[in-house]
Every structure is written in structure tokens, then in C-alpha cells.
Amino acid sequence: MSKANAAPAAMTRRDYAWHRMDTDRNLMVINSILLFEGAVDMERLVSTIALRLPNYPRFTQKVEQRNGRPHWVEDESFDISRHIKLEQMAQDVSRADLQSHMTRLAHLPLERDRPMWHMTVLDRVNGGHAIVFRVHHCITDGLGLVHVLNHLTDDNGLHGRTPSPVGHPHRATVAHNAVCSAVARGISWLKIAFHVSRLSVLWPDAHSRFKAPMTGEKQLVWLPPLEMERVRAMSKRMGVTLNDVWVAAVSGALRKYLDEHGQRPDGRALRAAVTFNLREKANAFQLGNEFGLVAVDLPTNVDDPRLRLQQSSARMTAIKRSHQPRATMAFLSIAGCLPTALQHFALNLFTSKGSVVLTNIEGPGSRRYLAGSRMTDLICWVPQAGKLGVGLAFISYAGQIQLALFVDTDLVPDPDRLMALTYEAFEELQLATAGEVAPQNSTDLAAGGALAAGS
Image (tube, rainbow, N blue to C red):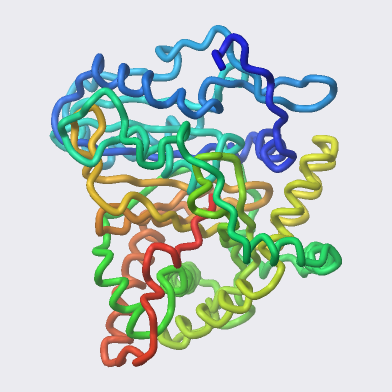
């Protein structure tokens, strides 16, 4: 079906909730940066993206109301040049300059009269070039975004015009898991309603500097990547998942950060909203949002790193076995049916229960190439909603893990320090678990499927 004749597609209520979630303090935009070797060939780059990205209809569609319902409608004036911009740097860009540039772009809302995505190409970055890829959350979640990146890129530098047929969105078919479908059909809506009610009556999170009023001034930071194998070996020794290690490391970093700022860390534990994927991985080509945000009490009040890891694992395991992830996904669907003001009220009520957002994304497992250029790094930042102003993320790529932090600077005036503490917390966990022997019957829980990709 041609773009001109494509019929409007009804927007899911979940995606509509994300579409209306922008505020002057929090934009619902997934910010990512792709770093490449070599000089940029803009003609080749734009032609590649123009050929491949429209294979996902959401990237040529805008949101319009039709018959009182939100719909995805083809943008008849779609022009790829309005979505890809080259910014030529006067000199080589330092790491600090790149972070400042990313922060400036992250404050810019996406235009709502066109498809809600944009790429900014920066030359002279680390001897190569970079692409800042910004996508509104209403289009997709983290798992869908990785599918898009895999389709845009190649597994070698030969760069044929035709993308790989593997996972091509026009050839992919919806995967139906009979067991999962039976389980889904058997889920009691009463249990989901119970969890929604339980979340709504939770006490607001413990008072800390992370719960202060926000101004909307943001900063994005990141650190050099960790070696995936080091973290995976630790998780195998302890019989836990990569996500459990991530939660434990962040808990240790938050604890030390509060202690350094004169706040007692041994009292009530902080609570986090952790993303939890609910989509069949094979269905990521459909884009949209299919994940829950689960409320987790972080062991920030525990001094022993091994005990923090054990508690993180136990709490995450308990949540996986509960209906809470589906309950929060249902909450977003309900929010998308409410008037905008009431949606924001409900969202503020929900987000008052936590202090930080945590997500991890399983990125490409091997090196990728875009328009013939080798991608060296992939970094992604999770947006925050409502009353949340601290977001930590890690994304895996080609055997490495990239840590990233996105914060309101009124809550975290020195984000580089919090980022450094997170890095140190991984080192602390590695030392604390070095003498452990992996359980004989343990499986590789640290494999990619154990990542709870979400935002």
C-alpha cells in the first residue's frame, strides 16, 4: 500500500498516554548517540536512512485525532531532510563538549506536526562522527528501538543498498507463544486491578535529595564502557541476572551519593521504577510500547555489597512472578483513556512512589555498520515522567555495557560524581563476589534474554 493510500491506524491507548506525557520538566524522548569511525558521507548516510527507516510506518506518520480517537496518519509532506541535520564542528569535539551538545539537544521538544523523531549528525567527534538519534516514546520502547537500529545498519562495511532480510519489518510475522498466550488469557483482571490499587496506595518514597522539586534543567552524562564478560562472569558466579547486578550496583551508588551529601543512607530504602519487558522479542518490529514499570525497593540501606546483590535478585525475582508488570502496563492503557489533566494527575500520583527510573536494553550483540562506517559505541538515556527526575540506563553493544545517566540538575547537581559511583559499585561487587563458585546447576542467566529491556 502506498503512503498516499495508507489508511490511518488507530493508536493504542498506551502509546497515546506516552504521546501526552511531555511536560516542561520531562520530555518523553528516548535520546541516544551512535559513535562511528571515519568521516561522515552525508549523501550516503541520508540515502541509506531514507531507504530503510520508512520500512517502519511510524517514522513517516504523525498523530492526529480522527472521530475523537488518536490515529497514526501518513505525513503527506514527509521530507527526510527535515529529520536529518548535519552540524559541522569548528574543531574536534572533546568528551565534555559532546556531553554539553547532547544536553542542549535533549532540552528540545520534537515537532508535533510531523513524525516525532530527529537525527543530528556531528562531524569531528573522536576522530570520527556521531549521530544523535531522538525518538518520541510514543513511537517505540527500547526493544523496538534496537530493532530499528539493527535494520538501519549492516553486519559488515560492504554496505549494499538492500538491508538484510533477517528481521526485516516487511517480512517479519507476529510470533505467538501458545504457552504465553494461554497464560495471558488466564491472567485474572482482578489480580491486575489489585496490583494497580496496591501501587496507588503505596506510601510516597522516602524523602531524599532525589525527591526535591524539579526545574526541568537536565544533564546527560556517560562513562567509558564496561566489559560485558566481566559483569556476566559475576552474575554467573552468584546465580543472578545481569539486571540484578545492575540494580545492586545502582543501589550502592545511590547509597554512597546520599552519604557524601550528608543524608543518612541506613534508614528507609529508596524505591525505583524498573522497566520490565512484556513483549515477545520476535515482535519488536511492531514498535509501540509493551513494557511495565515495576516498583522495587532498592537495598540502598544495606552496606554489604554481596547482601545488596542477594536482596536485589530476590526482589526482582518476586516481581517477575507477580502481576505487577502487567498491572502497570494496564495503568498506562487506562491513563490513555483519561482527559490530559487527569492523566497527569494519575501519573504524578504513581511516580511519587519512587525516586529513580532504571532500565537496561539489550543492544546489538556484534559490531554494526551504517552507510559503510563502523559503529564503535551506542549510548542511550531513559526519560523520566511525572515527579521522577533521575534516570539511569545501561545498554549492551558488541561485548560491552555502556552506563548512562539523565538527571534534573536540581536533584543531582554533580551527575558526573553519581555516574562515577555507579561505575565504582560494579568494581565493588566484582571484588565482593570474586571468591564465589558458580552453582553447579546454574544456567547462563546473564544471557541477553535475561535483560529486562523496556524504556
